[in-house]
Amino acid sequence: EIIVASSEIKANAALVQMLFQVVPIGIPVVDFLSFYESATGKIPVSQIGEVWFLENLIGIRKPAYEFLKRAVDIASATLLGILALPLIPLIACAIYLGTPGQVFYRQKRIGRHGRIMEITKFRSMYVGAESSGARWADENDPRVTNVGRFLRKSRLDELPQFWSVLKGDLSLIGPRPERPEFVELLTRKIPFYQMRHLVKPGLSGWAQINFPYGASVEDALEKLQYDLAYIKNRSVWLDLTIALRTTVILVSREGR
Image: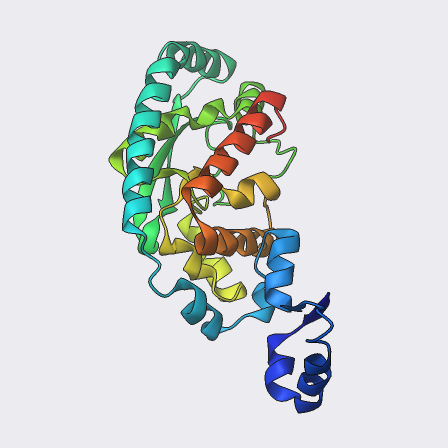
């Protein structure tokens, strides 16, 4: 198999002639971007430009898929929300007894098309943890309470977000919504970062199951490459794959 950059094919006539000679032999010639995506499950941001978006994301709307996805979101969020109801008072008591203060924590995030929305989570940090401003959570963040560490590991802190799914702000599957403060920074630092907002954000996504945690600009770049691959290839089958792998992560408690 021969892997070649499409830019070289367009610019190098001698290379084209060499590749033409292997056509009768049956050796496959693969574009580098396609090979990289199939091998890693992500799009190399450093190797694409505006033309890539024109070729791959024009006509991005998929009405039948989006209708089915919304129906699944409503049904799943309703069912899972009902099943989670008995846990809510127990979690609330554990949070309050561990560190008195508000049980729920509200935070602004960037949704589809850059719209600001508000999500609600169970509080997992000490009260006033961000009094000095927003910053990414570290793996062993001292701001996280003992109860909060368990809630994050088990993803139980996310339960209130089923309401955001029912409202239509979130989907079960999609790029994870980021905070406005970080989006402003990442848009300046990372090419095409705003393009991840072309679709509705989700509770779990292709980036989350392949690159579970991000706490820097470099991590955000890695996650963007997975997000772009998801946006390009999103389908019922891909969403089902992400949902199943997310379930495995939850059961094995591999999250942070």
